[in-house]
Length: 381
Ligand code: UD1
Ligand code: UDP
Image (tube, rainbow, N blue to C red; front, side, top):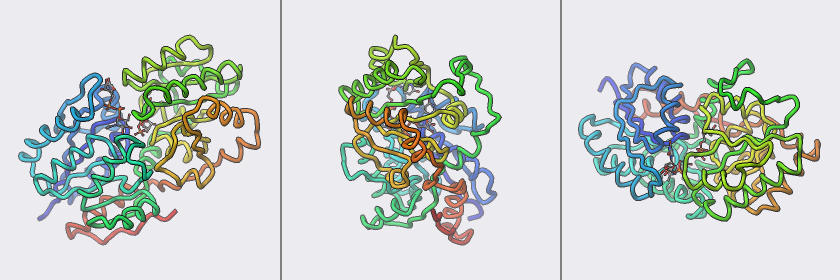
């Protein structure tokens, strides 16, 4: 063997952002032939990321449908992957995280006995219904994968406790590699909705929310708490790039549509999103990725979920899990808006999730497996 053929599969926004620097690193190595396959699970939110990172996509399954069900994503990905794997015969398939694209692609590779590498392996809440269905997707991928790339030591410990098959590497999270390429103090916003923000006068509360387990009452509670905050604090601006899920869109529009100082905007491209995070005051989110990015940028994060699979920044003191009750969310956000001391206790840049070298470690580990290089050292926080 003179080259290892590695297929990278992704389909949603966060997977694309976190796999992009890995694709670039794989393409940089002469012992690797990198093939990129996207399922297109997120058609509109995915394409700008592919463009901004300059990724060449070899196969696009184009599976997305409005209001798609989990079974639709899973079945279309498995059947779509079959001819792609048959044609390309990769030596390894890399999947990311906990999406249905990742689970179904891993299963499709397993059906062909192709080894799977799992990037962002070992995160757990211990609750199979939260995040739903992601906790189960991630666990099932751990069963299938033969190489596990864990962002942190405690993620790797979770996998060792479960006695998973294969090799475990602690690499840091590739999202930190991505952040290093997007954030800059001289960055200029280009979307109209961001150009009129006066960051010196307005305290920007950056919001995202999209989790399926929050659909219904929890999402309404989150939106109502934001509404209460907008009326209570005349100097804040809530900037909320709304996820394209119709359920999320309808709820956001219904509760926040006409509230002063609430900007409901289209999803931002990743470069604007990361730089907005760098300049905002506070982040309120149920997103996984934002819980990793905002601490690295020194921004306090309130997580509007009941639990998190990312406890590291909670332990470091920059993230608080505040649940999904309207009054609790309002109270915890108010505390940070009212008290400089409470705010500055949380506003410390901490980076338990990586040092920007995760992709290098992952590629080195793959090359080690195929006999091309030494086993890489672990990321130490
Ligand atoms: C998916 C992932 C979740 C991840 C999230 C990131 C699963 C099961 N869930 O959830 O882990 O946190 O992505 O955002 O894989 N839509 C569009 N255009 C797009 C994207 C979405 O119109 O570019 C709409 C479609 O109507 C789609 C719906 O959003 O049916 C939901 O998308 P889907 O990928 O099914 O679920 P997410 O909640 O985005
Ligand atoms: N993001 C983005 N534009 C937006 C909202 C989020 O580029 O309008 C980025 C965000 O910075 C992070 C990723 O998308 O890198 C997180 O994706 P999402 O919240 O959809 O999924 P999760 O991380 O919860 O799986």
